[in-house]
Length: 213
Image: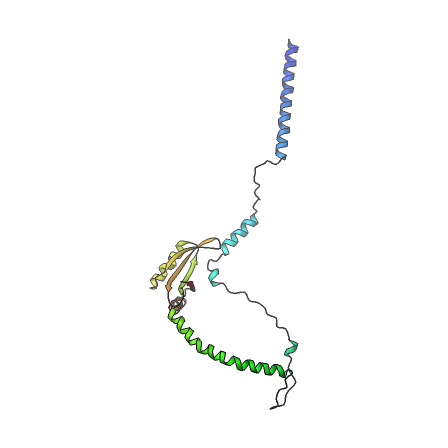
């Protein structure tokens, strides 16, 4: 009877050990095999976070209006045809290499003079028509663009104390929301420029903005 109990206990222990071995093998297999339906998100390093923070810190909402065209270096080449000609005696006629071409050019110039006179006469008439039609644009004076509505409101109050009514408008720029402080609209460009000069004199940076009516 004791021998039978010992065999049963030994078999139970063997079965438990075998189960643990199978479970361990399954665990190792599962950890090595990639799991489906799981999105692998690339790890974000400290350098990436620092670069993103620097980009947001250096972003200027007024850059779109105050941007300056990049300077271009121009390299001038020497044209062999532009070399100085031989000196000509004072009062002597300049020789021509193509007399036939000179005659054709003189004829063309003679025909072009009446056309130029007609265009010169039509210019005042066109200017008068444009003046009668009015300026097709409205003008605004922008006194800054800000990242937060609180900063824009402070700028608006500062302009109000100067006797200049301004409004705050919200707009998306470069994927970010900016708050613009503008005065206007003005029907005449001269009126907008006078306000801009007043702001510049008061130490406030301003930009003239033209909008199609």
